[in-house]
Image (cartoon, rainbow, N blue to C red; front, top):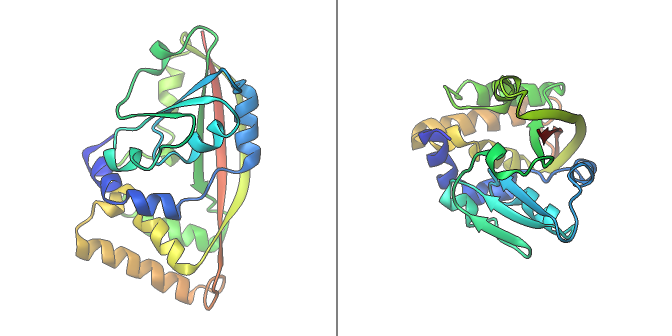
Length: 222
């Protein structure tokens, strides 16, 4: 994780937990099935954030080791059946042969015009922050075909219903936005407020449907 991203997550951990959506039950159910998660099984949740996924899996009976480098984030991640660890590890090294690796992301669905406009505001400030949308993460797997084989890929559209200030909070929780100095950060958030106040799909509404898509990718260790 880059320095700015880590600093941004440390600054916005509580806001991150409150403003980010949960993962859709269908995505979690498929992940649990593909990884055979149940009582007596252990999931390593690498980059656990505030533990949104860790808690959902632990509720299915599996033990979860939640690993996250940002201290402020990992403090939010505890719960029954969850062992919280601050740090990172090599995925192939910690998986036994035949063990499975799943990557699960929630990303805004930019096929909705007002969500695309929101993303355009956010994306102007990303700099060189590593992001799922760049697709660069795939290069590690393309270069490691002797280590992992692909198992399944699935996509789940869902909606996070939030008041307008919840959308503002969602943007404020983005690591590289949270890492901006106060005037620059407030300028971004004011631009978001102006969008929500003027766009036909959001103006005057007390609740907004923020469209997401959960993307699940699963590999097996060779």
